[in-house]
Image (tube, rainbow, N blue to C red; front, side):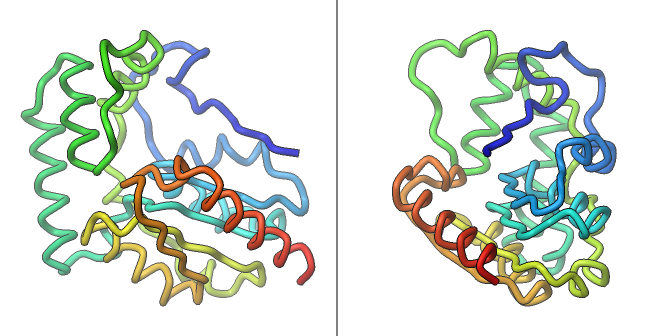
Length: 208
């Protein structure tokens, strides 16, 4: 069974005034059951890391795809530069949601959809604008290192900053690492190559 929760602030729910990854990790717990294979992309990857540390007994495996937990790679030039550019965009970037989203997609290395943004994407952009910076997340490595379930870290070979974060996660979590180029930050949009890789990892985790 695949469960894909709609995070608060995203359609079909209403707009929100603030998004905090720590609160979202608590909110995510309602979807966890014993034997869950938790998969998180981008900000959802940060949320998943925190949720996994909160409820490790629920997980059979953990997969994160380019989580922007840049704080773990602080001191790495690429990560430091990315954090500075992100802060500039959030502080002084355009307040129009469509223009903000265009700048964000360019910043993280995702393609921009052709034509005008849909109302759903614009709501997502408004939510994005009020997110707590994920670089502030303190990843509980001491807890995660002690968990028995396998971990997988996926990156897209497009950004030295995201690579730096994934390198730290791979080492600290003793995680498997897969690099799948071709879709930028949204690695899962590769389709079959990503699906086959994730299916293999989940099946091995089940067997183990």
